[in-house]
Length: 597
Image (tube, rainbow, N blue to C red; front, top):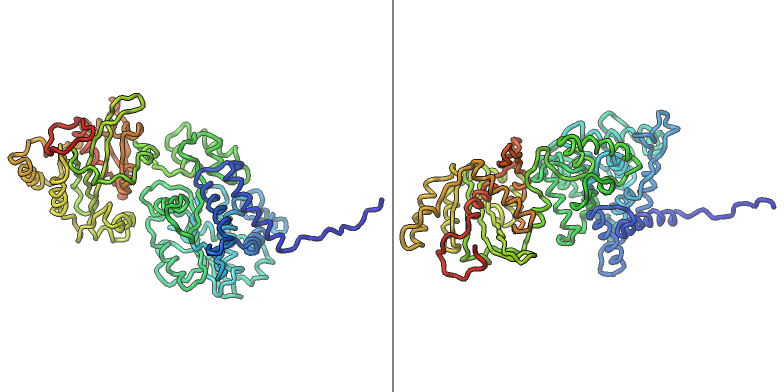
């Protein structure tokens, strides 16, 4: 039989666009269904996408998913050449072009496909993408940057890749530059001038260049790519980029990063915001978030953990490579830290953190209110030695509750409050302080001026003496002696006579006093006997505590001497816990007790 002509019609542009969009939707469905191994935050990002698809048909929902826009950008990216890894070739005529993986299609489709139904402009103006090393994030970022430079339809586009160092800022830019140089037709078609540190699009008077540190005002970015966001010490660069987009109808700011080590960094705090968005507790329709990492219950040594953090597993991240890194991590605590942060995308500390942050997080109860404990026995610890930085107070309450075996065990309920000079809070180098202070003074009180005024803290304690049955008010040895003497007199009035000598006491900051408290705090956290209200200042300080047992298994709280980590809130907590472990000594109030010890 003679072979006939192929009469099959080639798919139309609209059909091809729909294939790209369907690919993004299919990836989301497979993630949610568990057909692709993924961590919970990846799952939640995909659930958000699918939920929004379901809502998009409703007349009152503001956004729709535009397949044509998805296809346009995906098609553009897949015509760019590879410039890294085994797909790149020396001879540009032999270069392989980029092939987007399903997870990359999902990210690109989300950023460019979701649009406002009325205006047609992009829905997402900000993005946070966390993915482990070697997953081609620089390649993806560079490709998006080139699209924003020549194909986004913006007049006078300005694309910046920002970082804290020139080397890091050049990482994305250099990749984009090599792509443009390696594709002569691309360069000619869009009339590009490719220089060492800038790409100029002469047709639209656009530019693509690296940006380092704090650039100051003046930029008018249509696209800002912040690479390795975890290394940024403050929000200056990001804020400048976002505020500079004020005259752009659909400016786009992308933070792309691996995990870092500083739980008070702007990047970590931004990730916490993303978690709230994906959890549905914070509604922000213009912020796209996706984080690839194992879940807390996963074995960090497992292949499952590797796959959850590395969506390009087997593509640009090879199993053999990860196996070698894991073998090295098993032999060295320092390499274990590197492996967890860089290859599993887990936030951590390069030194040995003492407290388990996953256990601490499980102890959080944001519904817990201080007013519920008025009149109950209370132990207070104070760390007031700092004058120009952070000072802290901690209150502990106790109740007896039955465990699963019906045995009464001691539960601790912790409330902290913290103080810092306003000059320190607002100096631009303590953005985490500024954030906590902005939350209606709930966590951090700003003291006017350059120094902490102990008289203000003393007034707070005096007020609380009337409300709580203080068993002990404990201070570290460097705290104000004059305040301690005054508080003893105030307590004497409430006892209708001289207060017992042991109500105000000093807890020496020595191993024999703090080691038992640290061990009890750790045990209470792990067993669920500790309860806290989510105090972010205390949470940060808990993550900063380092400790290494001595030959007698004693531990003492320490911190990295990096000028950033603070453990004063934990010192206040341990100072309170030391006498709290003794239990109730006497009652000053006659209000009903709730399982007191």
